[in-house]
Image (cartoon, rainbow over all chains, first blue to last red; front, side, top):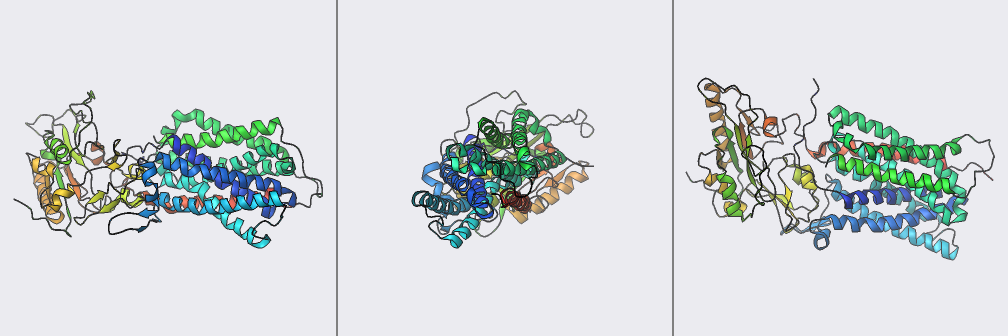
Length: 306
Length: 267
């Protein structure tokens, strides 16, 4: 006989600061990854959109430590205790591989370095017209590649952090890290697509961004189904039901991506020109719905256990 | 009989719930020694217990479990409520220690689990991890609080305040090995008297590697709000699986991105 997982834990009261941290971490990591892919795998005409993504990543990454610090009980005075163990007689750098929070803090610090340099590099390219950037072509690409690995981690570890607990729902599944990553990638593609409105030369990539968004959303949908299966198997799916409106919002976001991507995913005749269209109202609406879905998904997960 | 307390040895509590009378002397003694102000009085309308739960102000909490079967346990006795003086279990494999990112939670020289108040920064990861709902945030200090097993008293050679105050010796303090022997004897006595439902919780390593504060229970653990052995998992059980699922997603996501952005020879 299958026995439901029983939990007797107290909620950590990770609420609004953490919700928005998860949201911006998803966009920070996701934007860096999408931009890197645009630069490395895309056409030279994808470069303007890639640059948009690096700027988005900078802004989102800058917000993250502020939210994290504000959430601490002893916030501004002791945030650095995450990095340095101040235990008398045992002082030194703090790194615990078994604590996703500890690993995540270090990853965020290192990712911030990559984001900062990449944003500076992008700014230099924009200002000076240096197409190869500050780091040169080869080193620059390698730099982006390593940064993207950190980006993938930043966008996903928040879900693992929730799972590595004893909270109902969170600890009953392994899917949260992947789910947050897929959702973050989708939201990032949507946000870059949205901001092409303000950078006309980036409009070339709009169709590709919609297409990528749709792929990421399919991945997110698969993981969402896997999430519910695992949580139902653990017997804690009932806790997710009161948050049905949030789950529906998340599904609307996924659906919007798929609808927008549908037109761009059709096989085009070889050698045909890419779809070049200025981001219009439809892109605006779709992008906002996708971003709302990204936020709603995280809210639904966070509040399912609290 | 006074216990000589020596650093380097394992100490703990053996709480025998079969002789707890629910007087809450342990709660009072704990608050008095540890200078805990307590929460504002409130009527919970749930049993005779108005403490409610372990939290930052209640490091000992006597649970009153009155939803017991109507029939008596044995002939000649009335229906007995279950009472249990709950406390931090000072787990051998402590979930809170496992996830604490600051190193604030340590194992002391007495093999107890202790939160260093000057190191904790209030991230609440330990709150999310503790399977017993023991750790809670102190609103005044902004840090996580729980039973210290009277660390300061142990350093001074004194037994914890709750054990000293307990009038029925439901709470016993001492070297862990001695307590385990006493528990085995007590369990055998109860079984011989017909109380076959009596069981030890945390005496062996089936729950979090063994508990330094272990219990003799008169019903199954779930009745007392304690996870049974099947449900007693460490947070790290999801570490590899969680990262693995994220890694697979990352690979698929990157491939999806490459497919979407690949050069197609477009003019």
